[in-house]
Length: 439
Image 1 (cartoon, rainbow, N blue to C red):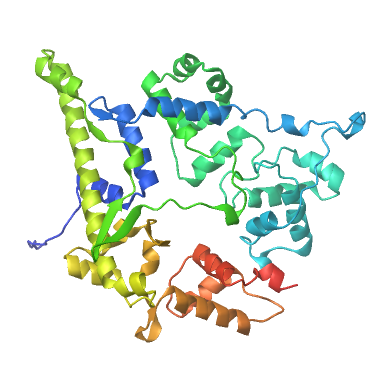
Image 2 (cartoon, helix red, strand yellow):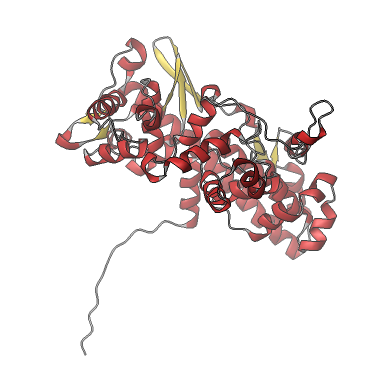
């Protein structure tokens, strides 16, 4: 046997570096949720915002209608009590398109498509499906097994929680979609919504053997979910809150993060004094650990601010003609900006992820970059739209391309975009979905 010594150099990210990268990728809304969670767990963190009051107000609004979805369907039409529980007719249109265009046209039979449309019509105004599959089978004539299968398919679509039977299932569907694995959180959502509604927090802590602080944190997580998936209507009424605000003053750019609404986070002076005065060794160690964490979180937030603004200023300078003269976007990659700022391209990618910039109009930062395609061209959003338009014009009219099909064709040409982006561009160009084009 022979042994040899090989010297290798590798770079590994520490837990602190990973956390910093995660904070950098947060949108303002995600950062706010992160800071709220840290604030509720760490007594060394203080904020100017009344987060405890806001959380409780959110919970009150969250639960005030939580048990009323099914009740809203137990209605009577005059003296005709025999019509109690009938399925209300719902206007088809934007809602049906929003939901069903997420499905592949070829994957389902004509009968299944008709059932999908029928089930969409059974949704209430909040996106709940407050009926048993057996009841639907009795009044519709569809096979029970097919109804259960189609309902299972529809529950996997966006927005998360749609087609849930009640509030508990709605929350569970959203937690699963978010990748949450905590079994206690699922148990609370499934079995203890009534206790939360009544304010019986002690019952939950006693039965689940958890602390009051942990129970409050679970309540905060649940309050951040959307109990009414269709609130706000269809896609036409979505609102975008920009993460970065930009103005032009004296011939120069001025950018700032749109985060004042979060409140100011800082160290708690009272507990800082307690650290100096405490004589109990275990207590001092506890406070020292919390102080270390609080300082680290505040440092991460400040580094996030500095990195994002540095990247935004570089983008503004690079694409100044686009913003000031409404000129076409210049070919620009994340590697270009990273090279200018001596950063890694992945840092730029995380910093711009999901963030919107507002200057005269609101744009997604990621859309300002050009993705490389075959033949070493630069693909702007307009290039992608042109290719989508061409693919639709040349498609087989008897078997039109779904958004997923268009995404696959674009990928084969070297353009990497998501199905959601394809759907967004298609709608912006006024191109109907594949089901409508196939009629």
